Length: 487
Image (cartoon, rainbow, N blue to C red; front, top):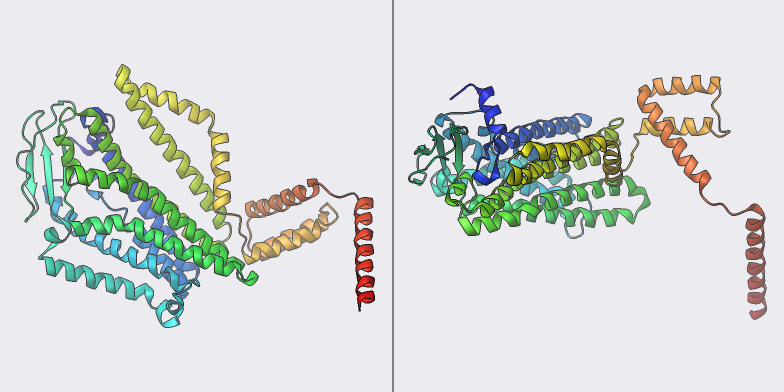
């Protein structure tokens, strides 16, 4: 096979859903998933370092590590590996299913940190403080038991096949992981410019599908738990910050259920129709182009939905735990959300447009230009719209230090202006509180905008307000006199 760079270029520039040239999409997914995994690990580290001994931070850090590793579904597409990658890919699946089971347990255990009716026993310190190590141990024991009981990886989660295509239109070289069912003869796409290429076919047992599809069900359960906790917390004004945490977690779990769940139904359809959902099914469709395109969209839609769901979930969880701990974390998370949504929408639209144009005039790059140019020209209003959405799901939240500075700034702005002496005092306050200049400007701008909105809101004229007050007092006095007469 040619060098790695040439392989990437050939795969990425020859994507065509009509003919099954889809391995470039697999490469893109693998790299996007890997970057997302690293990003979630970084968020997990931030949460842990903020309060290393707090049970809640340890729990959320473990949850983000778990969600991050689950991005590692197709690492073997990162590089043109040979058949010797098969054992490693199988061992990786065991670790993946360990984290998949762990995530299900973590979703339910979120009730240990928020008041959920009927599950108050889970808030005991002996449970809360030991979840971060007890749940991984329990998951490891269950996975080990399943492997021993079923006699190995293949019978527990499924086998794996490595297919290498070296000659256009010929027969592929097939390598099986020990115990994997033989797929028989595998033929190569008759496309000289696209060969050679390789792919790995992972099989799924019923248990493997349960761990995969069960993510949606357990995420929905977590939504109900956190929403119940939010309602309970809102009944106590002193628990307002905790209620906001529960709200953010609820939105995070709901996002996972929506993003991931939207494609699970598609995959259930594919599983019912084909028995598996992997790249081998592409070869069974022959010239049935509509079915082939539908299948590819479903399969890669499912894989990318896992990435988007975990990224959104990670952002919301980090916002919930750190919004009052790390300076400006909410603003940085909103920027990440806005950028990720814009890039994702743009990439999907460009791919769809390119495929549609390719169908009619065989120049798919024209579709990329048709979509790409307006996206670039209209990027500011699009960013503004996405930013508004991010502000709704992740409202501004200020740390204790930021609130102290806002109080000082509000006091200095009572007369509407900042004197030179007041500015010096504010600068000293910002330095003492360890706030950088950009954050100080953001806080002051936020305060000024809120005050401006209050000043522009309709007010009752003083004479009208005075008349209304006098009328209310008069009616109250008459009511008091009538009560005295009745007595």
